[in-house]
Length: 455
Image (cartoon, rainbow, N blue to C red):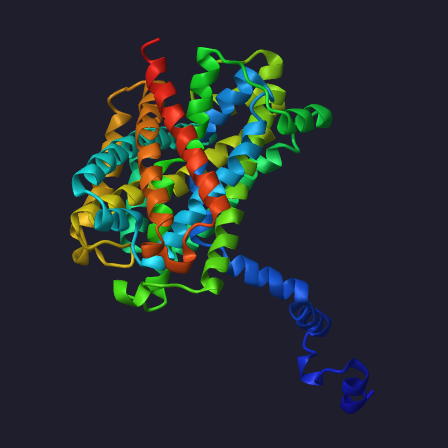
């Protein structure tokens, strides 16, 4: 067959036919042009700050809380993942929209319209709470690493994880770092996969997901507060807004003036990103509660004090594969959450005091901003050497979130409802109703947390 005959039959240049690659290349060319493939690539490309924020919400301390819920109440709290999804999505969407409209991070916007002293108190509490969370997360990551690699010492793993995390956050460019964080979110699929490793009774799962059940006792109220605190956390508000600003700076909008205002297309892109991230976050929460309910609760293992406890308890009940998935998930989520916790605190403090801030800046350009990140991680690291009970650290964290969340939500709702600030992009009445509802719920949760310490 001549070259011209070959080209006529196949419909492609004969030069593509090299070492059997013709069919593959022709097939990939055809697939890449299909609408489904194009839309999938577009969707994945649009994922960024919202996806990372949602994934960072499921940090090792959050995994410990979800594991406690599953171990102590079985499938009883599965409904919460369905309940929290719209509230999380709305709050983070408001935060993202505010950042796109104002061109500032959350603390910077609050500082512009409210008392600096009130913001300073909230930011201080945020820093303390985040440091405790960082300490718990680093400890869980080190213990998970030791479970997988018994020869490594806990102290070595703690220091190595903290050091590597700081180097990456400080010295990588924001563009590279954002891609790195985005890829790390894949590790959370370990928890979704674990649902298919253990046997889950479909009828019970569906029933507990769709029909809320709750016991109004001290233990249940406190766990509900902890679950709300670890899903709708203040550090996520600050991180979301700051990352939207970082993305705009990446596009060349380096001044606040150039970032003020947005378009419907930009808001639509942000919403897709945020809702995807929040769905992913709640799916992971659902998966962990379901797996622990099917294994730990079913076998009477109810005393779970950490994420690593959950992984160890799963080993004899669900096998080595489920154990490995849980352990790898702890490490992956920690790698993602620790820089988000440290970064969100640093953004908030820097914006409150008017310092130069942003991961797009080099260390010499924003020493104070990066200094806060370093202090947060180092203090979190030292907490593990002070032998503080991880459960107490989680309690302190829950109290901090209970105190901060409703106050920050109050500012968020007031600002986003203000037409003078948001213009045509102010809250729709339905969004406003949902936002104020979760503000009240978080306020009640904070009061319940504090009261539980004295009752």
